[in-house]
Length: 311
Length: 311
Image (tube, chains in turn brown, cyan):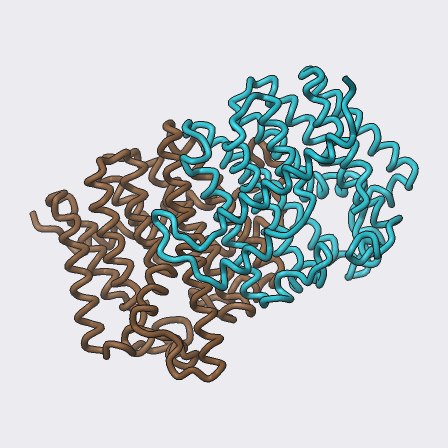
């Protein structure tokens, strides 16, 4: 029986619901061993940053990759939550006036607009820290080797040589642009920045499913390659969206990258070539997981979904 | 032969030098597996936040506790560096205008004064993340169980139920004070805030030495109790210092806590009773490690040192 698109969407929606519930449960007010107290206002800010929306793409990648490799769904759910907390901390910090200065996120006021800059910094710090807490906890997996591997992978994809490093390159490029440079970054610098800022965590999300399922090296590599391809496709789709989309559809300001002088591949390649590269990447992603057979169909649909995204 | 104070100081100074070198080596420009690049300006900001000063109290606690339990010094040094990076990230974020708004730290301009707020937030984020990277890396210890334990302990002492939570309580209390409250926190709230904000990471530093040395449960508990006592003593000593010290000696503004309406135990207990509590805590710390015998003398000297600190 051929794979149905409606099945796919229902499945992603169900994941998103379950992730929401699991995140809410991790962010309850009850202290865990070794915690002194969970301050109410901080917890509320963390919940605001994490709950209530988003496509939950990264959690879906963790969950589906783990399922593909026969991992325990409860383990995968905790890893999915850790990755999502990491992602949400990065949004909260990137939105700050000292960074991208955004007032809207997912159609709601950004964290620092509801609280203040100090609490937004702190809630982000606490989410980042809690992500590692969740991964290292025995509840995630009985085997500490896998837990340590997950921590290392998340840290490396989101730290100085990954996401945070990408954001640093971005700030630097904006500084150069403000100082009068016509093009702050060339094409290969743009690719590096995007791989670090967006691609690294998406790639890790797919790989993390393999890690938590204790998959073979070959399976882990395949899912990593898949994740890298859709991470790159995701970013190009985002750049295309920024040029083409209507502000009303997106729920945030568009054409903003251009106004800020952010370098995008659309700019370097032209719109048509960018679309071709996006499609090639989607194909690469599908090929990467072809060895899993028909069971990989859902991840292959995710690749299409990422490229076609409207928001 | 009785323990000599000069030996003690020379030993701490040697630790501080070795920690400095190890931190510099971890923060070099060379990428590690899984990293895309190490952006120059971000690395420079991270080095500025971490290198060049400080007493390195927390690393000394890790190193000496590990030595006491027969741990590998190279493992202990990596854990010491992780704890210090965590500490330095917290200083960088606390100094931000959105938090405590400090211009001076260790007699030098604070990180955001040298770079900017965005880079200071990001360098802090990257240091926090890198601390977990260092702990989870196989180079820290061959046994993944210990690495996962270290990650969990560091996360729990520094996250929402520890240090970050303490800073959130602090921000909240300042808000209440600004809104006209005469005393934002009562004595027990002040104790909780201080345990979380300062005590938790100091307590973990001593415990981490036991973890990395794979010490017995009894040894780990003893070192944890020691760490909790000196953590509390440290904070009271700091509060006393704030009242008594001369700005020139301290290299930062004093009397500042009072001006901000920060609640301290000195205020609640009075100066003499606060000193008595500090001394009692030092005694508790010494008693906690008495079972290790004469080899615990160095940690006992650290307890005296913490209480007598002038800066």
